[in-house]
Image 1 (cartoon, rainbow, N blue to C red):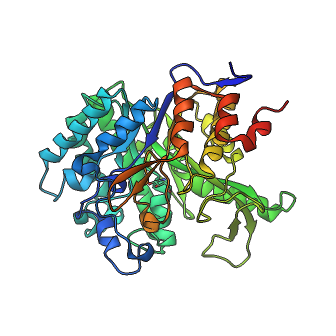
Image 2 (tube, rainbow, N blue to C red):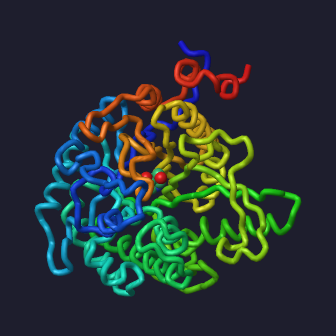
Length: 442
Ligand code: IFM
């Protein structure tokens, strides 16, 4: 009998999240394939290649592991470029293949949460201006109608678009994602078109499935003023929050998109989310930086003395999870943590990171905030976009050359939590003893 136990609400969903391009492999028909094959775009010229070979059938091994280890849901995505390889061509075989995978997940007891767009676009759309093209929301709506039409007897839990904020800032401001631009005008246009695409998808899904649960996955980045006593830092922190964290979600409430110093009314977006999906990883301190127009007058950095992930990408700051939940709570809708995790090939930080973040989730759930599920990113190491294979986010490791799955200690840590729907003192003693006193003060 453990000394103490933090229970999660009954019926809580426990899963992992993946995305089509990152795990499937073998797709040469989307913008990321083109990006990887352009010189200097991806870490050391690495390729997605076979990825985790889900398209070849290894989804089964990963989902069987997930189910055996106590998970009851899985968030996966489908790949637009496979379903609509050309503007005038649909591939029913690809849809049938997805039906096969989703049926497999359900059979294993994993409720599917299905993402319709996770960063990748078909090459034909990319070559026709991508989401800068004002026809993109209409094309997306056609794809959604086709895909949801084929899958709605199996799925009723949908994410329309994954992290529109990352898609836009990485592709049109920072330049790390295709098309590698630095153009605020284009960034605004793309954000607005993604918003229109989301709204159209929401309506199409509800036409077919009135009771469906539909949302989008928001990349919530924590921002804290570097000097809380210094008004310019406080002001620029608010500005970062408003443009990065609030823009898309506020437009779903009031229809007004305020982003990249522009504003537009998109009335069809009003009321188009049934839950708030949060992807939370880390938090920045923000200081006012005069004259830095390109950096929106901000210097962002991790708090001094933060515990850092393997390549320095993520600082372990669990209080940012609380900030994300507080932000989500104000929408008065069910909340799902649609992603959370850390890159850590040696699995030295992951057990502690995961338990600390889940402890924050537990805390608000016990104030009766409506948090209903948690998806760890990710089940198995996968292709990490421009950082390729240099970052390992899996509970399970992946040996690329052989496709062998490598069991990390975190597999048992997460399985214990999922099976018991709780974090107990015994679990913390076993998997992350260094935080025992912090979690269970005597
Ligand atoms: O791998 C990504 C995922 O595709 C979107 N959210 C963040 C993850 C880790 O960087």
